[in-house]
Length: 304
Image (tube, rainbow, N blue to C red):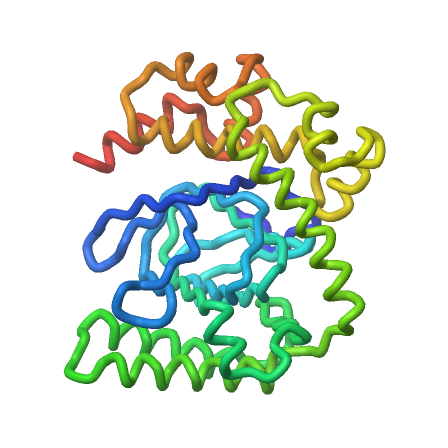
């Protein structure tokens, strides 16, 4: 049985910037998050199923809406953790540091609205924060209805479907602006921009060098901070230690290699920057609830 509420901070997320999609029935299996528009409409939309998945702490200028149709999803936004269950949704505001994880398969609707569309239709959108999650009072039914209608129209693509899709996007934004938004002082926004710029230096370096040994001195130098201050800065804004973040990046890459290649597990452990076998195995099992061998067997049996 899964715990209904979460009172801890989860430290097991990844930052992939590439896309790996395959069709599964009427859904798309979406392995890694990428902020990218669909080719025919002005937003990124997916009606998808997903096996055990981890997307680490990251941010972007897009609004993101996740509506769980089956299963559950743990979502961390600015160091607050939410459990989003079946028929629940959550909205992630632009530039919020967020991450997602789940150990079992789920089905969901994912909608990402580009910042350009927000800025062209909402005055001072940079000073607005959208707050909509399962723990808030108030009905989300209007949003759910719109998302389901969006999925149905986009699946069937009737004549003029793009007109209806645009209409649904604007209806959705109107509801969010008027019922699920709060104003943010400009001073807070300027402060956020400064620490996100510095965090971007760190995350870019990790994505490029995660297979290597990265010392605290190495990463502190990249952020132009002394090691002691760097540790406090990173923990404050990312909600986790740098080592846990680094290992989570390595772990997600390992998982992707595990289910998409036939390399030996010991080779993949070393390939993705892990040097201690016991620590790796504990981390993997704590994150995915099974061993790498069990994950690979499960994947093979599901593909038969």
